[in-house]
Length: 242
Length: 242
Image (cartoon, rainbow over all chains, first blue to last red; front, side, top):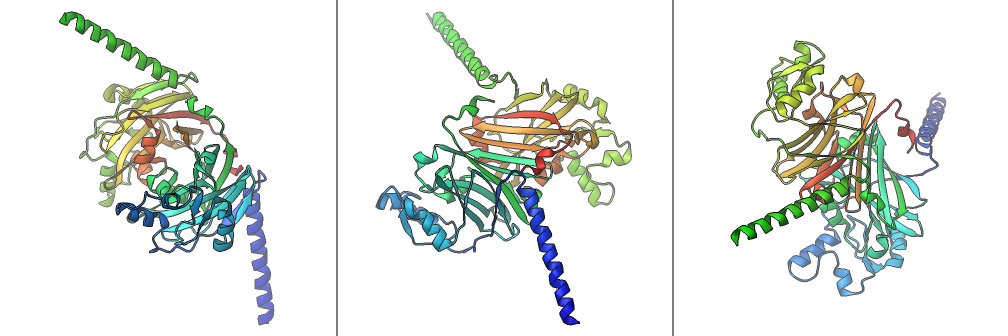
């Protein structure tokens, strides 16, 4: 009897999972977009990031902030850009992608438009959701970070970095879009190069910023779907539109 | 000699002013949009807003928050919605526009798409920039507020309210757009009715929210240009796009 009850339970679970999968597919694949479910990275709360370490060095008058690798070795030498990981690795731009994939197991997605589905938004700050996006012959890194800029008030920050030089980054425009509950929020900007510092982009607030309440409005069952599109930007002709 | 020097100075000033006017016109009238320069309202820092007063009453178990006028008199009776003004006036929806124009000297602009140019963004919080927008047979109130939700960290909140009922408000979608320095931020939502409380919309963060650093990136000479567009929204068909 117990065996049959368990079998019935398993069948019910399978039906439920199948329904969930179908629902997700229906919602996000309407425009043929790729959906990537992104789990939060393990947050090393007390590990200083490389940029923070660099800034500390700067305060002692040793090296410029976030560009310590450039100053010491080679302008094309990138530190490991995984935020919150205190990874001692550094290497040339060409091998950053393989390092991020192999060491930090960061997924890479192909396609001009994808949906980034960040799970477990309720996890305490600091938490990061990271993915690589291969598009238009280049690789980009999307970082979504939950951080307490003001103590007790976590916010979400989303930005896109090009795994390339700042000059290459100037040729692109990225768009992040949230769309739910009759509300839509779009952020468009030029990506930064990973040779710059993701921490300073976020602390400057020069990215998509969401309060917790707004993040909840855009979330569904604790997951936040961010539509991502990358285009080449020869001229910012749209600037004079307004 | 002094007279001629003064005359020459005056002519130079006139040329400079003419150039500034031409520049402003060229930047903002490119798409034939109306531009409204909006000066900050006098901020009565210590005057409690009507909603705060209503909420205080609620805590004493007297009246529901922000709907005290509805409960006492008529569901169509609106309090004065000028934020930061402790105005004792209340009246029917039909006469709210004339009250706002005559008593609070709030400008009203016609047109489907306008540009709201808020000046003196550097003024300390709390400060409000308010304008009425007449469009599609209805009047809307745009409120931009600088407020310190977290002490010492002022933020900007922008929302649009319909001078009408919540049912009427559901028929519209408003869009606020910032566009400068190769960055673009768009917020789209259904306007709230002015029978709801502008203070609670802002404290919930259910509106366009800007950190000071982002507001500075979008500002030009201490002024922030917000493009506004209102459309009718029969069905939110765009919701399933992502």
